Amino acid sequence: MKYVDEYRQPHLVKKLSQALHQITTRPWTIMEVCGGQTHSIVKFGLQALLPQKIRLIHGPGCPVCVTPIHLIDHALHIATQPNTILCSFGDMLRVPGSRTDLLTMKAKGSDIRIIHSPSETLSIAKMNPHKQIILFAVGFETTAPANATTVYMAKQLKLDNFSLLASNVLVPPALEFLLQSQGNEVQGLLAAGHVCTITGYGDYHALARNYQTPIVVTGFEPLDILQGLYLCVQQLEKGEYCVINQYRRCVQEQGNLHAQTIMNSVFKAVDREWRGIGVIASSGLGLVDEFAGYDAAIRFPLEKPLSLKDNGCISGLILQGKKKPCECSLFGKQCTPESPYGAPMVSTEGACSAYYQYSNSRDHQ
Ligand code: SF4
Image (tube, rainbow, N blue to C red; front, side):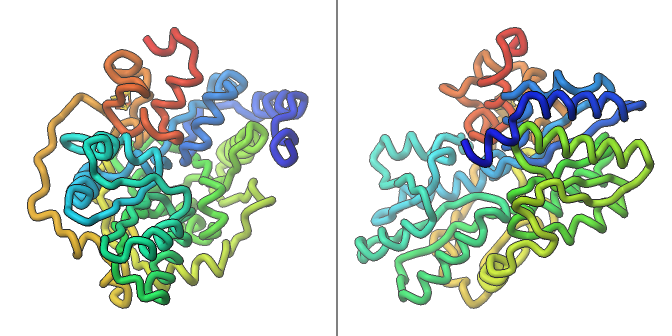
């Protein structure tokens, strides 16, 4: 397949693996930020091709996984209100809230619809003028422009029966939170290429400099990841801490200016809770005043957050790279994709689902 096979060529994979062995003299711990990269690493068995001195840890880059329970509870609350249609993506429906999940509520009769693009909600709003249509679209900066465009278009079309349950999160504040946290072990970062397609990587220079952590903007195929690791280790070995763009076929330093313009006209940075991690300052996107009328959290307030019950899921530690999925006592036993205890087992970008799908059976013990 064009633009995929070129980045999986075995002889080039072998060459990069050998090059990594040649330059690595000391132990290094490197975090891949994105869940898509985690899936590639586990699916293609890339860890086995690395020098033993390189330890990979998995980062928080799975948007479904970091969506806090109270936001899912809020979506559940909205879905049970009369004359509402809640629209979201497939993954999100199976993520447990504090009591149940959206799929169960759908089975019980709530009008919850799976969409493939945020703009579908506008058609649903036009066809159902007497119902309230709510878009619950989680994601990082990658999906924020499409969500922003949908809100913007709703205003242009005067669709007052549309609203958004704002849930997008931002990567750089979360990385800073991890790098400054007590006991941080991350020495180098592979940044998520698709996020940088939108944002560029201007914000990463200060992070690399201030925390003496090389950052390589990296793609998702095996050669991308191995080259990203090579560029990271090369810097670590030399004591250099810069930002390098490995994913040049998609990412430019300034990012996509059109996407940034629509994002910035509809959203502003707000404090946001990350599931299992806590509140990270300025790490989420809320609606600016001009679009505040489209805020589903205001239209359908959740009076009293539900108390949470601890089901033993350690997703917070998984998302911070402090534990691996197979270190969770529930992994592959009580917690499976068919019966998930936490979001990382549900999402197509979750570390637990990657280990479950691609690791061999002994890793499940
Ligand atoms: S295996 Fe399941 S219970 Fe354990 S951390 Fe992952 S999602 Fe949570």
